[in-house]
Length: 203
Image (tube, rainbow, N blue to C red; front, side):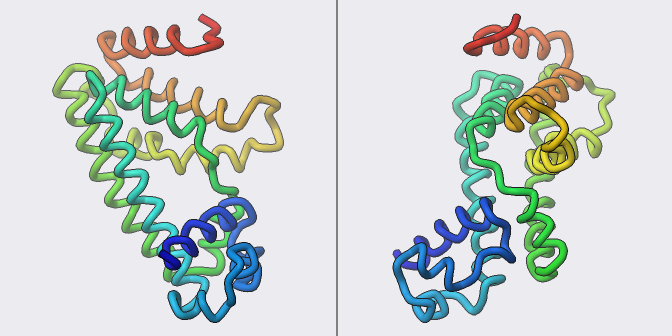
């Protein structure tokens, strides 16, 4: 479907180059179609951007749900999700800078997705606490903020020129250690076994 192709290609270009650096001509040329064809499917670039974000978030939720449904416990599921995103191409920080600077309508779309994600993360946290994988005295709001993958993207932007290790490895380590910090002994045992089972584990 032409509309889906446009969203998929726009997502690739926006993630790589930011939004302002991608013109409608660039998008049309990369797809081998006319700019008119794009405008037959979308009002403007921001309309494309909002659809890219919506589709991306739906994929994230679907992936998280599938991983959690197949996981033997919530800690292992969280580790699998973190590891999955270690091998995912993260968007450039410029994408987020462009959104907040030039696309105010899209900010609302982003905020709605954040709220939806926070509800999901809060449910996971409460389940983990109930099952004694997570400590009962954690600050839920702070933990949700740290569990957000996009927080890792922001960290990547801050430290991208200051560290020599892989940015995705850095985010993976930060997320795993955050998870370890909120876990009970029961949860920590699962994390340690998982880390030991990974290729090239230093343990």
